Length: 278
Length: 325
Image (cartoon, rainbow over all chains, first blue to last red; front, side, top):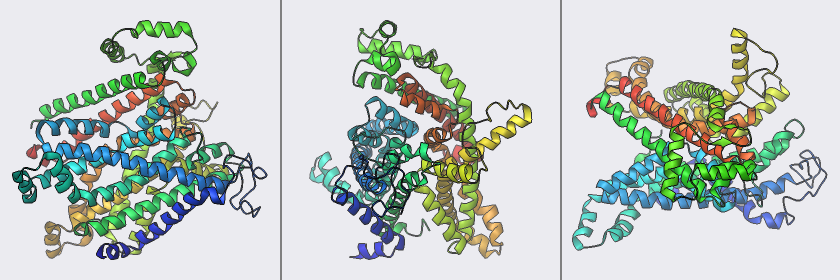
């Protein structure tokens, strides 16, 4: 209960939650609201917004409904954002936990590995990965995961190192529990809140990365996405501003909502940190 | 630790990162679906049997994998990043020709965002809880969530198409053939929109960081002491807080060098800026893999160099680091 109350104290966090719920709802209901594929032209080409009540956000040069594109794009953005973050968290937690728990050589080795991935330009690497393995939902998701796990590993390593020497962990060692068991049942549950906060912010970054990739033409050609819509609108900037403005606003409010939720979670889960961020 | 030892250690580390990227590129060529020779040739060159056969011989693609890796390493170490069949030039030459434009853009966006971000962050911390603080932080929140390429397009829409104030494309006016100061001014004029759009995301980031860092330092005991002594607030901020609060922002900013390069790919794509980001986009459209891998390697090398220089500067600026080892 106190968690929800602390979360609700954050006005922005509530707004964020409301917006994200709306986006999620549209994503889930997209096939019901727009039974026709968003790739198919359904109206006159280049209708401006509010010109035709059937197409409130207008149509593109092929007569495709912008609103339908936005609804289907929400599915891709949320799916890739959440799944790639989940994969990144699994990689990051595994590496960070091993490094922090065992220390010594293993720690050295794993941290050099982590630093390597943190140093190299992430977006350039994501481009190379997706281009070489051909753009599909799976390759895009994996590429984003591969470039975004290092901060999780560092965070988890730090937590594991400090908890490793605590009495309740020492007690588990004395009792004879195995390393993996201690890591999973004793330490990991105590590191969940910072991991959840970091993960929520990573979803936002992943959505930005996905939209950037599909803007460059590295999107899954079977799925309508916001980045792709903006990329396609580039050549029509002069004639049809609405083609690029609305998908951009969709990305902006979704990412903003998730960031607000992340900040609210941070305040609610780490009350001792409050005030630090102001 | 002595500065020289430190320098040596960091150089070794930097070399390992670059080596790591070379090995990564090699692995990607072999893990990619299809024939490694076809990847090395790029989509344009894959149809040319003679070129493929030449690549096979050159990189010993029928030899064991470790031998191929050595051959690949050797060629990269001698500055051979492969051949762009599409452009009919060595990849290294192509990248070197484009690199200065990217360095100009990223450096100017970096300076723009750092100066503006620190200023706004300090102002927000100084006016904490007031209207100015809320306005600055809301702006930072919004720009932190806005896709860079979209900001770029909107900037073109407003400032080039509607207001006609600034040029939307290229680095110089085509056919103008300016020299000297006129050329400098012309490039600067073309630089404004790309710099601001690339810089805004990072401005938002540095604003948030600076504010948080300022508030943290302002809560420390030595600031309270200064206050108790009756030092005016503005002077405390200037003389005591700022110096301590800005260092973490600088460190963080240097770590961000890689992200700046990623942003440059998007910015250059929108503004047709003739740098390696735009080169990467063109290579992407043509599936010119040697160029893609080459740009990836060179950007990694640039980022490693920037981090190295930043580390050294940091040691000079903050003498405590040497004492701490």
